[in-house]
Length: 214
Length: 181
Image (cartoon, rainbow over all chains, first blue to last red; front, top):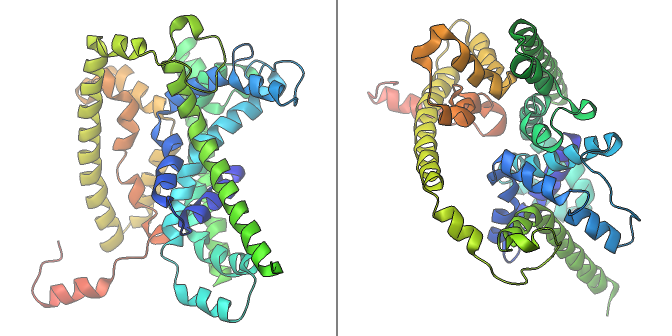
């Protein structure tokens, strides 16, 4: 989620800049979000395949690894693999929300900063970031809700592997595979309550921070 | 060449490198799927970065399958229905939650947000497996999109994300005799 937020802001800043071919780049950046999750997870599973995957082939060609890695089978790598795929998938969502906020920023702040000769990095941290914080908080909470109940990406990539099992996969396993409806329902309800609790705490802290800032 | 000019060129190159890396990162899996789809089955297990030879046999096979064409039709039906129903529910709920003051508004908004806390597959399974909810059942093909029908989820965040629509216009219209609804 933090990776998605950072990458999303970088992508949004790039898409907000004026350059030739911006429309094409905007369309290209939306591709991960447009592809159905199951399909994109399957594509990544094929790319990460330990024997025939292009990622291993590329890394070996560049001399970064000596032998193919089992990205989705090795317990120490599989978590990073699913995080990488989920970040790839969800970054456009964060970028879109931040881009919408960037396009509504008042230009006079930037003109004043330019006249005063403020360095662009300083302008970003002192002007842009505080102004887009509300939109970023919304993006983060929606991504937090989705990431906490993530199911499809992980189920396609690593199935029921214990090293990457999330709350949703555990609940589904109990409810569907083991047909333990009572236990599975309890797990699902607890999952709901945990996510709701995280949401309430996040909203409370977010409001306090925004209120304190103003 | 002045230092400023050099700095400007370096910044331009850096910017375009960043754009290139981001675009490559975003589209490469999609590109690789296209490359794979244009290979015959015999070459499937050979890694290639480019399209070496155009083989459309996979596309011909897919398009000749009646189930694929039926799946496209189902997708269009589901997509249109979901957009229309979600717009209807979302717009009316967002207007009510944003403009109408009533007791328990915050609670309703939290419940709406709470819809997003439950796993998607759980919702569809609950509807399918509950024998008392037969009348609520959707066709099996609609399940993946069921979560989009959660009411007004996308309307909750409007205060934070977008500039609120000016109330003055609405007040002026009401003064001129227009009804609030």
